[in-house]
Length: 85
Image (tube, rainbow, N blue to C red; front, side, top):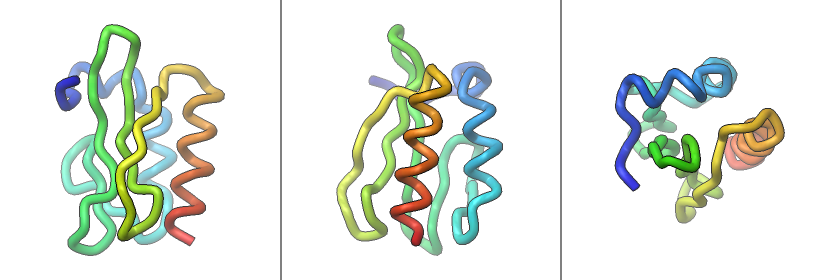
């Protein structure tokens, strides 16, 4: 699965906008976010839809999840808030 290009990031833009509002999370480039100097979240493109790789904790491993539906995006946001708490 390749990293999402600019066009592929248009579909998950609603969740990107929500992620930009989270404290401590900084989007270094569209679709790639950091907490301080540590990578935290990035997106991939796939025929099945956009996927996000996000760390389960600031020092944890990445967890991959699809973010095509509203429910999938809601789950990503809940996990992000939990990891950043």
